[in-house]
Length: 362
Ligand SMILES: [Mg+2]
Image 1 (cartoon, protein in one colour):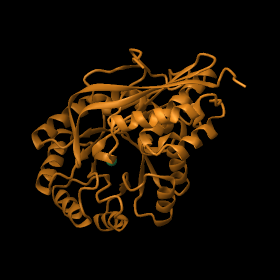
Image 2 (tube, protein in one colour; image 1 turned 135 degrees about the vertical axis):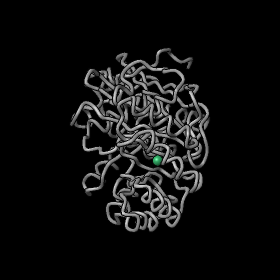
Image 3 (cartoon, helix red, strand yellow; image 1 turned 120 degrees about the horizontal axis):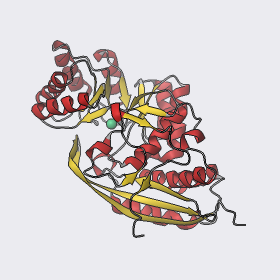
Image 4 (cartoon, helix red, strand yellow; image 1 turned 180 degrees about the vertical axis):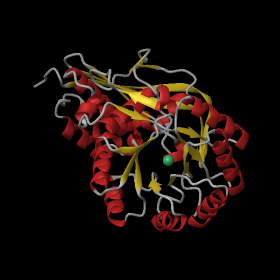
């Protein structure tokens, strides 16, 4: 029987957002955000929004593949009660292979339902806090641009800078030194997106140490399946290591909890969807691993959903939700990356609190 919280419609549309500058990581560059916007409408009229942000350089997903996956999953969702969100999201985990499609659909279902009962999404996750503070990333730019970017980041009041590496040792060392010059006193952390082997990562760390630069964290220095390498970089490089590409499921998280090759796990909605991200975070927290929340090239809609997860659960040591800064225009209304890198969700009274400025043509 249909109730006010039954899912009545699921629509998907392209969400194309031009970027100020390309976002380059080891593996490729994104020149514009070619994302997917999902709208879930409940019988009682509540509407929820979700976003999928494929990044081919990260995991090979594209806007077309995510749109197709969302549209394929939609019919089975019609008539289900969004209030019974756990089995609805479990079905998505079972039936939808695309992490981005799962993320967009699960976000939209939970946004619609928490709006219909008028609670902010962060409260569904536990309501631990109502704000998180993000770092800002310097991507694979040259040393001079990196130094200028670091100065801008400091002017934003942000105290932690994430630096993409993996373009080659000499170039990487120069980039990190540029950031250290531009943001003296800031905490620095590196992300190689799998580009190194353990030996090369250790050489970079050693060279930086000679310059008195000691990163607080080294994210995914080696390929996803090189868990030994993660452990070597930690042990021999005397640095905490974060697993991003290496932990892309509950079973990866359980294995990391057992083997402890990394000390921090980067939780991303786009890798696994919302429910599995939630589980990954709980598994890691229970195992005493550090938590990071990260993103692909996302608009404030998906970024805010991730901020709700991190704020609601609490205990996230690293927050990497800065890609709103890369967009040439903000297609959304609501909370965004604010002063000092703060995602302030305290004013959100229902749902994610972020909606598109313009209704998409479905
Ligand atoms: Mg990463």
